[in-house]
Amino acid sequence: MSDEARLENLAKRLGARAAERLDVAATAQKVVERLREQPVRRIVWVQQTWLRIAAALVVVVGGAVAVRQNVVRSHAAHPAHLVADDLSDLSTDELRDVLATFDQLIRTDSGAVPESSTDLHELDAQQLRAVLRSLEG
Image (tube, rainbow, N blue to C red; front, side, top):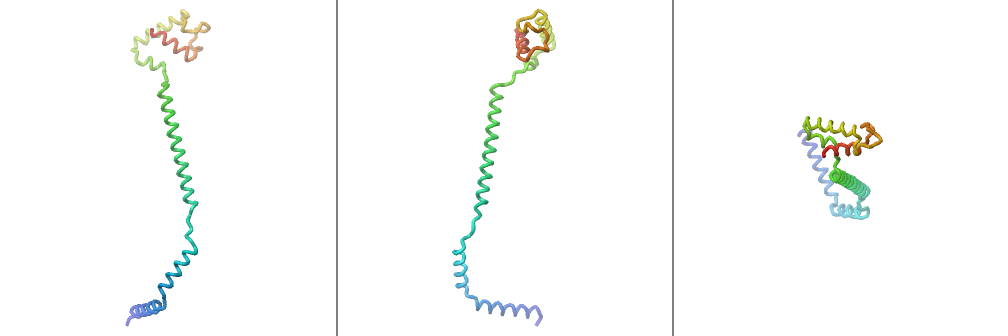
C-alpha cells in the first residue's frame, strides 16, 4: 500500500472516531444558548453616520437647486438691457446718422445731456442710455 493510501485510511479512521465521540444535538444546543446570552452586536453608529451623510447631501443638493432657480428667475425677470443690443440691428449708414445726430445733441446742449457737462466721459450709464434713446425718436 502506498503512503497516500495509508494516510487516507488513517484520516478516515480518525474522522470516524471523532464523529462517534461528537454529540451533535448537545453541541447545537450549547451554540444556541451562547447566542442567546450574547446578542449580536449591531453597528448602530455606521447606520447613523450614513443617515447623516444622506441628510447633508439632501440639504446641499436642495440648496443648490433653490439657488439656481432664484438666479434663473432673477435673470429672466430683469434681463440686462445693453446699448449694444439697440445698436446691433442698425446698418452702417444708420449708425453714421446716429453719431451725427449725437454730435448735434452735444453741441446744442439738448435736455438729454446734463447741462453741467458736455463731455461724454463724465456721463454715467443711465445718462448715456437716455441720450441714445432720445436719438431713436
